[in-house]
Image (tube, rainbow, N blue to C red; front, side, top):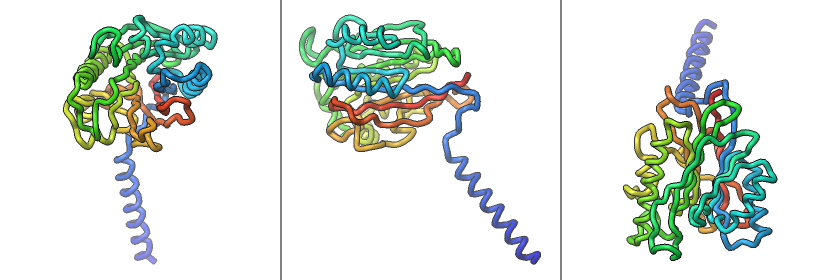
Length: 291
């Protein structure tokens, strides 16, 4: 009997040790005192009918409290009316090329502190395709926690990579400038609040990570030590069959991840938002912020 008890105690110790090991491998949970909100991104194809545009807008805003949109500059007037009627802040600055990358925030949850737009590059000159690129940002006060949250929204040029390899084109060099500007903007804003970045980057996550081009997002943002940007795919894997009809995961939500002792906001999970009329799915990430 004594021998059996010794073996039972030893087995229990092994089990406890195994549980501790597994627990040590999991991400650290957020602090107990926290508030939760969702941030999402969706590229709503500019060629949609008004009815389909409205359907996609209503879908993505039903999933999140902060929303970054792409390709919506020509719908600015409608967005202004919609936001005013439905309790949302809208930032869609002039010119139309900048308004393409609009930001929305739920008024019941956030107040606007500051905002701005950064011109990055114009590959082929004014009025030529692809449009000029801007990185837009808004600093909000999150009411429940009292903390500032800075949301940056961007859209990189299309057709700039093939299986993670950069295409040797002027539009690719423009995108490289924009990626570095996003990193610089996030780093500059990190002292003003907790930083979230969203947008259609037109670069597949897994292909970028596998090839590792030094001027694309994986190397600029995610392969570096903390603090730096980390995406939903890095933290929680690639879900679904892609965010674009091509099957690639090219739409991103990132947050500025700090060293643990300075982290007060955590990305806790995400989901792909399907059922859109656009050629893109949305991405919605859940955040917990310390109160």
